[in-house]
Length: 157
Image 1 (cartoon, rainbow, N blue to C red):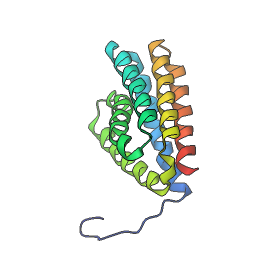
Image 2: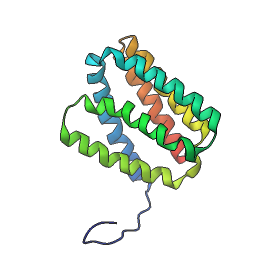
Image 3: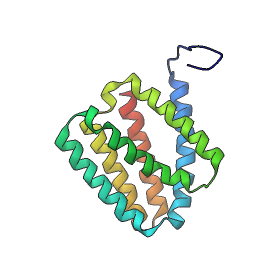
Image 4: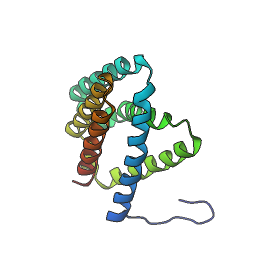
């Protein structure tokens, strides 16, 4: 729904998906490189613990409706750290718009969010955290690229 325009019926096509992921990837990759240079030391331990806790929780509950909110909060904090490295309100606004588009894409495939896909995404995050701990920005970016490919696959599968 848009003010003064009304309701628009929208069905994302392949171009929409490609462009959304392409822009998200560009922003997150460069943001991750910036973040890798100066992330707070406590971030690694905090993120590792949060991801291990959420994996255990998701595997225990097996109910997307129950674990959706805490997973989303962790996702925003994790990916938001990379976007926050820009310290740029315009980039943050663009990224927020991309997140709304990602939400639309997930609505198309309710199966894209399941226990297995959520655990897989969190493990992909852990690989990025490990690379950052080793101070290997290139490996972290490679991990992010693998994660993005996984997200696309899980969303469109």
